[in-house]
Image (tube, rainbow, N blue to C red; front, side, top):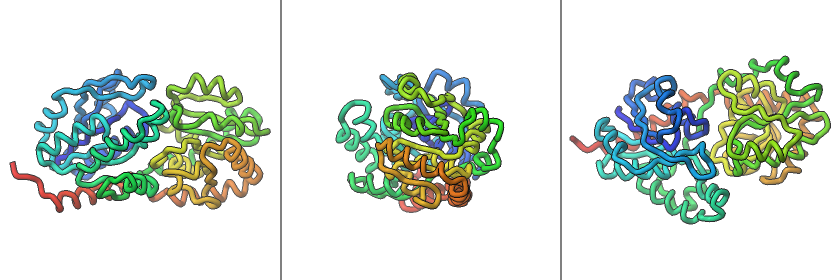
Length: 375
């Protein structure tokens, strides 16, 4: 099967869309298919494509999003259409379509090529966060793009409900995988943990982008708990402001690969503060690492965290609720161990191979409903 994967983000970008698109491309190659990736061109893209991608990547010119230069916005041009004509896909896969993905959807429709749209980013709420409004406009665009697709895939039950309530048709559930070999309790590193705790009893950590919608500022009260060391792993436009606002927190910057896996496993509690997650991959990685999770009772974490068994769900936006949940878990090493073991068991079979095969099932369903047009 020839597939064109049009994505708003791809490595070396570090975010959920980029990671999922890479894993999708890898799985397609692993199963003997012929994918082509089309993604925005960034400063370091050309130098890393050979190393990062399992298949050819066509980069289209882009510009940084004002106020958030880590996000690239694709510019108009003929490169996308030329790439589709050259690859002659049986199906177009749109990863978090909004700008480049919308053009990909239009190009697929003109060629009568079936398309699947994967919903990954809550752009309506992002519009309110970054623009102070515009959620209705964002949802009109989301609805228009996804309604044109043969099938929309939502990563969680909350996202599926949100899409359905906003009038998006033909929505199906498709979760995310996790590398449970890399993210594993056996990666726990006593020396690393000791260097981070600096004599304190409990190590609490956040992993993710440092951006306004992540609400990392809510860790302020947690970071002041006696005997607790809080670490933040990641980078983004809010990094400088958060370093000033959270003087008790140790900021470790961006970490990846096995180093990130050791950090996850060396935590005693993982805390994710963002209330707008359509899935929340970092929660799943922490769970695979055998770490109990504290997360908002909203969005993707509702599917991932079994409250009172694998972690705790708290009121979104309430720093005191996060603090109280961490304080509760700090009181019992046995409880943390029990939660961590249950968390690991809950996700260890959710491999990228398994969810990749689920994706191929969606491809096959779409192709059987709408056979490819003969050349």
